[in-house]
Picture 1 (cartoon, rainbow over the protein chains, first blue to last red):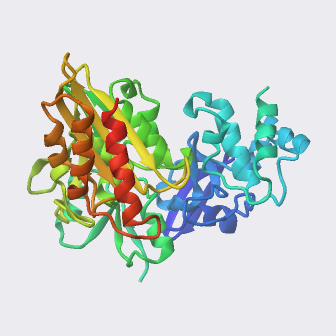
Picture 2: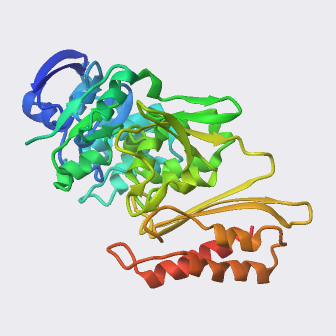
Length: 149
Length: 278
């Protein structure tokens, strides 16, 4: 076990965990932040996407020993002010979510893309790492287009 | 037994730990190792967490050549102006996986993971990258094109750490080509891949060339024999066809979950034709 200090959604946390425990499990099991989902557990599906020090990461591939001193944002932190983020609103208004498992990752990736439009050629590339098994993606892309306009 | 981690805070400490005789697995962006761990294909071991080492920090410095610190990620390259001089690095970074993988995965990790289907390694190899291997005993530099010896076998001793990658600055006139053939446009592992660079004379004869392939041999393969066939010659349809045939003798593709030998052979020749028909 090791002690790791980091912030999640602006709040300080210290957890005791095995050093290779996945950030995903620490968020869900130790901090009860169940907005982050486990899909494939092998870095393919994007359901466990969170933001760490300003960058998108897959929390199933981040060992907690590498989170010391980092700042993590989960879907719960996106509306921390009590107001929904533009992307969250757009998903609501455009039917961008169905079962909801991919939605937190989709929304975080979309919000990142709107903040960093130069890092992908288009929405499809920005969301290439986020899989959805319900929607067929059209409503998701429409939501993001709506959020960006 | 479970997985343990040592986090050294100085290079001396890191190299000392590697020299102790205990098998330590260097841990950089963790995007491969966490997958193996989760899949149960990695035996319990101790990791050497490289995150806190100043000497390995993500850096892109140009001083006669481009130096990538061992912790430099795909994203670091994609957002750096260096992509103007090394366009293929940015193209390869894009192919590696989602943005969330690009922000953690490292070039040096791609080299050390030694997958024959690596996306970053072919680009590095086509740019004549060299690897800095540091141990307590010595510091040596080896060409990436001579680093691999077999499937996941490489010229790195257990006490050595990949500290940096060096890429000579490309001379003006080189044209880059990078094409990955996978099942989908994104998030797919290659069935075959060609990272090519070519320098033509004024009369369109090939002054120099690099042809590096993925997924058609046990390791990333620089096709030196096929390169030799076109070097110094004008790229006529006959010469291109000769190269497209010659590559067949140099590759060793297999049938596996992603493709077949037949498909890989055919498409690899097509990639050669496509590249040389520029």
